[in-house]
Image 1 (cartoon, rainbow, N blue to C red):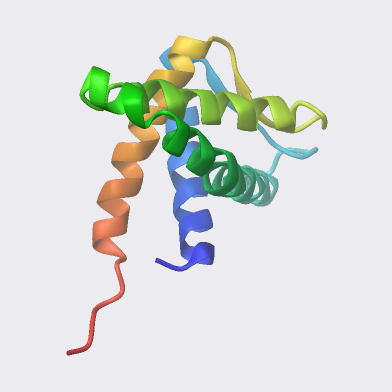
Image 2: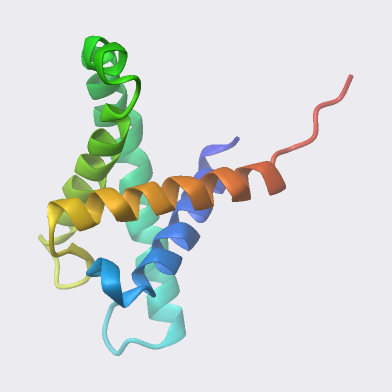
Length: 130
């Protein structure tokens, strides 16, 4: 999957998860907050999440191989939650972006984002030529 498509799918998944008020994950758009600013904010957060996942996520997943074996892969939920929390922390440097109120709600939100990305990845996967 191309990087641009991954950013767009991340942005859509983060936007969908931010619509669920129970998760306490909020997408704070640029001012004045019209639909265009929400879309730009979601794309920017999706880009930051994709970069964090590509760089830091890869290093963490390689270092956590023994924990993957020990926990039968359940550590990936915590790692993905940490990466989402880190993305939210990076975006706190500005007055817009992603806010995650609690680490464990972030873990649940990251699980939902992973499921949404998986489904959308199956739908938008480029077809292979034989």
